[in-house]
Figure 1 (cartoon, rainbow, N blue to C red):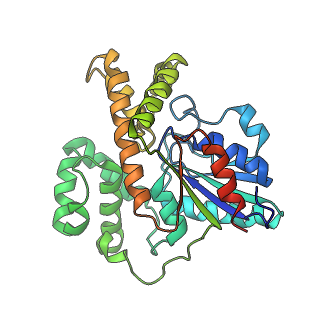
Figure 2: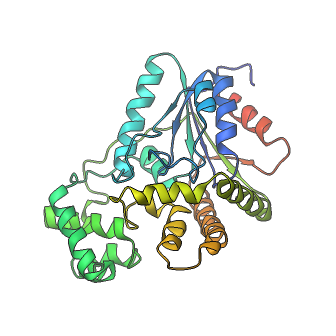
Figure 3: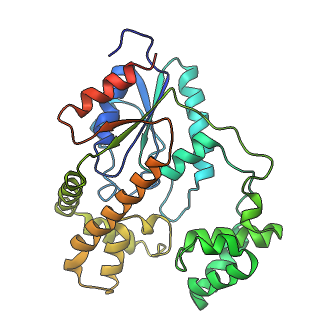
Length: 312
């Protein structure tokens, strides 16, 4: 570590299976920091194996935040994350400790760094009505409806993107304005800028693909399918919920529904995880001011510690 003053807030991002969690843990111990998770899957209780959630032992070593804060039946938005993370950073800094923001949900990082447009709050009655319409007609029909009232938003959403289609229609029904109206509108919240923004990225994509396969195999061996079966047995969850659309869970759920053979979960889950990693890397390349660390380098962890220590 550098002999200069250590950074107060370090952000550590990267694609899935790049070694973020292990690096964040060591970095937090070196800095005397607490970890704020930047991960849209780790917020859900009962989803431990398929999210590679930090173990109780790891969480005992360093305090972790924004893990296990939602039931899988509930949604959790980027706006909620940005508000929660900002308050946590202020609280942790107020206690004289440093913060490591670690995860791979790039939309969360963007919301936290750039701030958010003033948006209307969620309306439970409108969402319930939209859910009922979707069950009767399907999400592609609601996507077509969205195209009539907000073509700009509809054009960037897939016909089965239930969560975002629902939110866009909800905003229109509540306000009479398309979602695109609020982008760039006055009332934007102020963003939070870390002292250092580190990005774990592979120089060899094949290395990351191998890591993804190894991790998915380890999840299956640890009982991932049984975890999904337990979630299904609750009776109040369904495939369109944000929690069940997480990579791996979605493929397992659909296989258990009989959409394809159960023995194809591994192949489909790995393919979906690779696509997620590709999207994450694309996001990262569009985010300026990051310090890239080659996660496939033998001394990657040492590079992370040096890069953070040089922030003072």
